[in-house]
Every structure is written in C-alpha cells, then in structure tokens.
Length: 290
Ligand SMILES: C[C@](O)(CO)[C@H](O)COP(=O)(O)OP(=O)(O)OC[C@H]1O[C@@H](n2ccc(N)nc2=O)[C@H](O)[C@@H]1O
Ligand SMILES: Nc1ncnc2c1ncn2[C@@H]1O[C@H](COP(=O)(O)OP(=O)(O)OP(=O)(O)O)[C@@H](O)[C@H]1O
Image 1 (cartoon, helix red, strand yellow):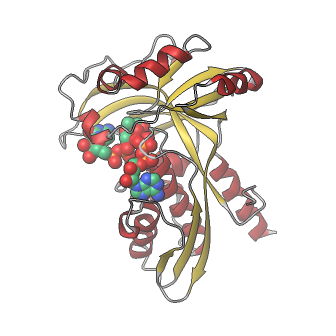
Image 2 (cartoon, helix red, strand yellow):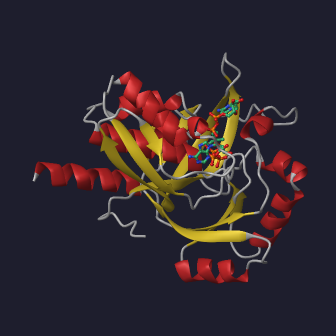
C-alpha cells in the first residue's frame, strides 16, 4: 500500500505526551493538564472518496468497534451535520497504532477525518473551528487538527506550538490496555501538581502523573519501563499503556527495538514539529491552487 504524501492516503499520526502533569479539575470533573504533545511521523492511514448519496460508509472495520462508534464515522457525521453537507463519503483505513495505547490513535483518526472532509466537502472551516468541533469527540482531537508539536493546557484545548529538537522514539506497547476513564477516576491519582512555566521545561524536571498508578495496576508497564531505562530516558505516554524511549540516533533506537523481548512490540518513529497530516493538507491545497 502506498501511504506516501503523493498517494490518496491521508496520514493519521500518533502523538506522545513527553510529560503529563495534572494541575486540577474543571467544573465538569475533567482533569486540567499541562502536557507537551510530540507529533510523530508514523501512524494510521485513511482514504476518502466523496459520494452523492449522503451516506457515510466505512469500508474497513476495527474488531470490537461498531461503525457508529468508530471515531472516523462520528467525526464525518459531526462535520456533515455541522456544515449541512448533502454529500457523503466512502472511507477506507489502515490501522497500525495499538488502541488504548496513549498514543492517540482514535483521536488522530477523528482529526484526519475532519481535516480531509473539510477539504473534500469544501466546508471552509478554519483550523480553530475544526478543533472546536473535534473537542466534543475527545480531548486529544484538537491537537491533531492543529498538527503541531505543542504545549497544551486545560483539557488539551489550549495549544501553544513549539519547535523542539527532533529526536527518535522507540514506542513500545506492553500488551495490556489501559482505560483512560479508569485512570482519571483512580483515588490515588495526583491531581495538584504545581503548574510549570513552559520556558522551564526539561524532560528530567517533569513526569507523567498517571505513570505510578498504571505501573501499580499493570505491572507489565513497570517491567517494560525498568527494561527500557537501561538504554535511554523512558516514560509512559498519556494514560498508558505505551512507553517511549528517546534517542538522538535512529540506529540506536532500532537496535533496542531488535533487542525487545518477544512479548512486547514496538515501532521507531521520528518526532516532528509539523505533523504529516498538516504536510498532506498543505500539499493538496497547493495542488488545487496551481
Ligand atoms: C490523557 C490524554 O491522552 C492526554 O493526551 C488525554 O487527555 C485523554 O484524552 P482522550 O483519550 O481523548 O479522553 P476522552 O475520551 O476525552 O476522555 C475519556 C474519559 O477520561 C476522563 N478525562 C479525560 C480527559 C481529561 N482531561 N480529564 C478526564 O477526566 C473523563 O472521565 C472522560 O470521560
Ligand atoms: N478509529 C478508531 N481508532 C481507535 N480506537 C477507536 C476508533 N474509534 C473508536 N475507538 C475506540 O476508542 C478507544 C480509545 O482508542 P485510542 O486509540 O484513541 O486510545 P488511546 O491511545 O488511549 O488514546 P489517548 O492517547 O487519546 O488516550 C478504543 O479502545 C476504541 O474502543
């Protein structure tokens, strides 16, 4: 399958939370966060063919997820209703990212759908408007719509793009799934980390506030972290269960990937400041105007 920027496939990249601090809760009980979203160059792929029937048809399936619950379908419907679009769309997708891994797979799929259909259906919504619609599908959707590596606050809707040195990450799935709602509902979750000034960010001076309780409830995450830190600075992303290790040399990242015990699976990805989705959008927009 050709998933390069020149094909009909739209990238749906993964993200890492390089750190995740919980600073409080809002009046709806949602947790207020400070986090650094690192966009990756790797992820799922989606392809869209608009139709005149008005139907949203998913031509691929995810085991255990009904079409109506699939975030791709829900994002398409939401945009169609919001913009009163009469066209529909046939959508194919290829999933590579593990679900419930804390690397944003479902949210990224929703964002790619919003961005691509805004283009194909000519809805002309701004990035900000699309991100606003996306927030109702999940807290991580806005960051993927913006498609920039960024500091984020609130529940993830306050976004401050940043240019980081581009490292390589070995992202490892420990084979266990973690429910975001369960982590955020846990009694022992720290919820009052003091806010930091973005300028003061360093990897070493930050942490993932969810990591301790996930390591307790899922010992395999703790085992994986213990194994990885021998090779490189490592941390859990989001509410887990994936863990990442940071490298400046991609060959080193691949060597550690090769050394992974068979029970764990991982992929090596480059951290990028602009997501492949944004690059794809720029490319198709340019092609339209020339
Ligand atoms: C932890 C992060 O991955 C950081 O990137 C996200 O904040 C989680 O985002 P997500 O997976 O899209 O989560 P959602 O589907 O929006 O929320 C799942 C559930 O987690 C809880 N939740 C989620 C996000 C948040 N900031 N506070 C919460 O308390 C809520 O109970 C919510 O019902
Ligand atoms: N297109 C989709 N891709 C993945 N998951 C989907 C999709 N549509 C619905 N879901 C549901 O969403 C759940 C969470 O998936 P997702 O991959 O976004 O979790 P996550 O990696 O923990 O994300 P986050 O980092 O945002 O917490 C899945 O378990 C699945 O039931």
